[in-house]
Length: 336
Image 1: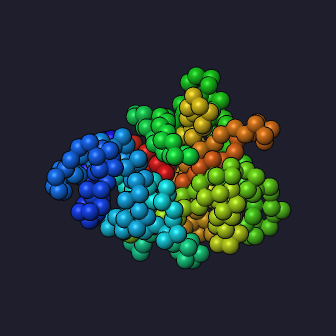
Image 2: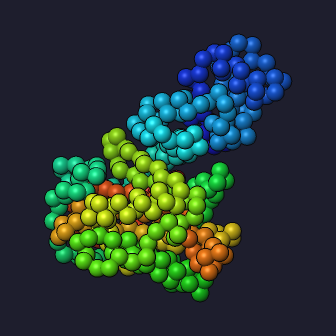
Image 3: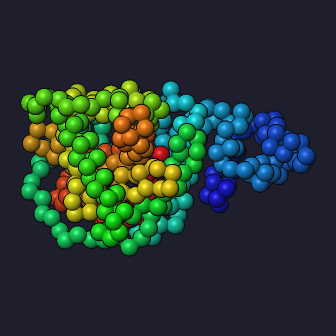
């Protein structure tokens, strides 16, 4: 358990009654370490003898109500229907972000319009930012190797994500895979926007795993997160953006807009950024992460296991690039 997780666990456990706290201490230690009715000793014992923050948060005494109220305390507003495993993921993400803020020296922040820095469905449907010609600047290279963490099927995963910079053949193949996927995904998705006037292309739940997860993030304050679980729900959420809200997503497939990396277990992480449009207006920017895994029952093609989309209302003067972002921002985008 990291120092930030220990601090967060103690902070969260403070809301428990004496009875629940001492009972939890007995459970964690199998009643082998008496705490003698001392709350401070109980808190220390619980954190010390818990194998991980996730294991501790999964305990029965830390129920959905405790997790929900804790998140609201820090201006994170999950849906009231969010299940406990998803609330646990939200709490772990909150602690990671708090740790990053404490250690971060400099954070890149997109220049927001004076009117609003938050993007809601209403903002998306009535954006007022005119999209002008974008001036492309010289390609920049990040000089760090960001590490991202996320949970799939209750398993904590870590992947190092680097921008692919034309080196080994494997990295070139990965970059090509990422670009092919991104172009297919947004082209197929955008085809369902009625303003395009084109025949909708194949896009549906068959391209997602049955337990696929999607997090949609709208920066605040307060920050709003919406979680979708299941191939049907995730597919419908993406289609809602284009068919109901008439949005078009324009990914930056060049000039530092794409990062791709894989791990030894077959997970391919694809990250991309771009601009959001409606009619002839640019409403803001988006950042998105995909976790792809091959499906042997789907002709060995990749299907989407997990995704995170961040939508930000802002005036756009330059094409957004992942290579302009800090390590903390890249890690935050990939953390779900």
